[in-house]
Image 1: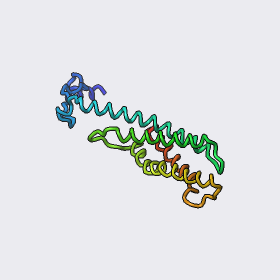
Image 2: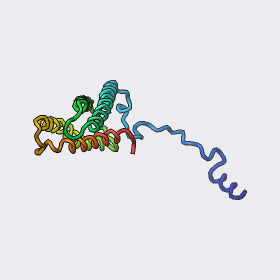
Image 3: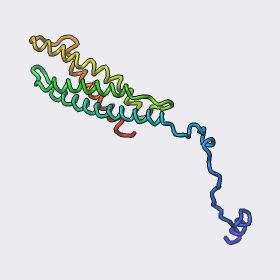
Image 4: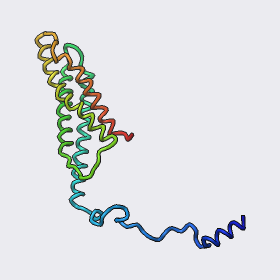
Length: 180
């Protein structure tokens, strides 16, 4: 053991064997140019504006999801309580506000969408058409029910479209609420 220690210290020196290299990394060695490392007021402004709009998108999206859930719970067959139309209207308006604020959020060059955000965008291909169709089919169904007619056309799928839309909307919220 002692002989091994003597041989080791002779070969590698007895000074601090585990000393770090004093050379500091430069931005170029890390793959960045000096220009990229400089602060950018324009980029900072764009990021702050994006954060503002996406925060609004989040708030309106949560209101829309809650209102959609309440509209589903208040729905049924035949005579609906007046609250159903109010909840459905709130869901549609808040969903529109949520979509608008997401659309207004500026993009940032070089930003990649992945993980939950990618799934959030994919699910929009389900809930956007659903949020357009659901109130239209609901209006058509209400018109027929007010005339005591049987639902036979597309309006009979109002509940189904609303249910699928609500599930896609809730999943969309969950994908950006939890990291997976």
